[in-house]
Amino acid sequence: MPQIALITIITNNLPAMTRFYRDVLGFPVQQDLGQYVEFESEGVRFSLCSREVMHTATGDASFTAPRRGQSFELAFPVSSPDAVEQTYEQIVASGATPIKAPAEMPWGQKTAFFADPDGNIHELFADLPAE
Image (cartoon, rainbow, N blue to C red; front, side, top):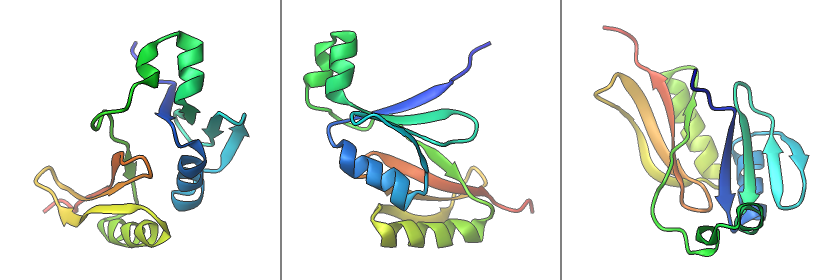
């Protein structure tokens, strides 16, 4: 059966990204090896890794090339549509880059979009009450 056990964000900016995911989004650091940081996360392991370490580990030169474009999105569930508003305001005030303010989406959720220090766009969401 397909399963994801670990999500790792590859970055050239590990200190800023660590501060963002730890201090702005609230993920406690479980392990910090300098160029690799793993956070406590229920359900799936979540980490950051330097591009240099990935290049050394894999030998793949693409890790030394400049990153281009959005290649993934993380979606963070919150408890209610009102919590989307509150959480969005809180994380933007703490340093997240606002992308799109909370809005009701046609797929039945209230969703807001923000970016991390590397410009990766992520979302907060909550299901809207059934009508």
